[in-house]
Length: 118
Picture 1 (cartoon, rainbow, N blue to C red):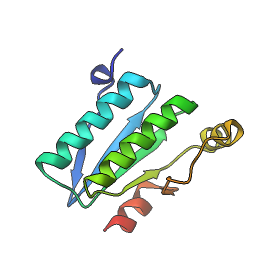
Picture 2: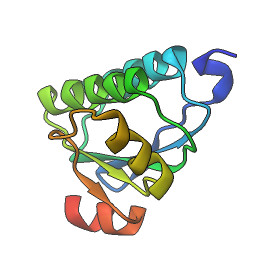
Picture 3: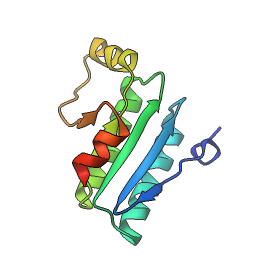
Picture 4: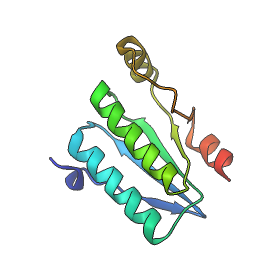
């Protein structure tokens, strides 16, 4: 299944964009996410992006790196990104892998992320 079949959906909410991310996460999905986010920002702009991670059960080093590229690309286009709802097991797994997470802005809930970006 490629990213398009997985159904990356960008949901405009006022001047923000909410992106519910559902697993399993893989390279094609992350490429589709990056493409859609950058296209949206180019065409419409946004004050910020919230990626809802609550539906992601597993994330490996490569997928986390691909997510970093999405976040950094959006930031270059002027839209900060907050990751919302990262599961405890995902966070623990990434910590055990020793990934570089200095770039992550995260909140427990989508509502908290939306409030921070408003």
